[in-house]
Image (cartoon, rainbow, N blue to C red; front, side, top):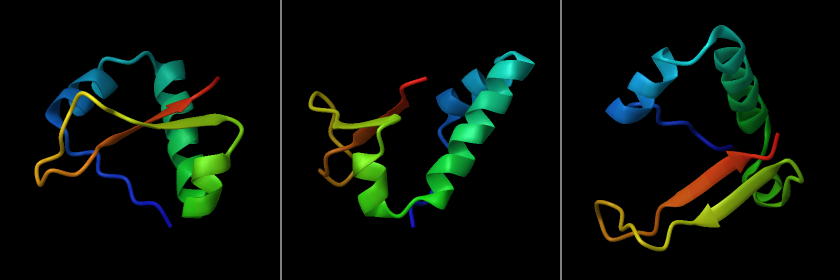
Length: 70
């Protein structure tokens, strides 16, 4: 099951700046993510999972971006 790490300060700041409807949509997306298994996450028709090629993770790993297509 995927886990969400929401400790990024920029993410937290942007989240509190969202309008109420946008925050509810974000929470709905989080619930969707937490209900999926990893193989479902990669192939879900409403989600776009892709490698971020111009950034390197803290231990050299490739970070990934996930966007809800709504």
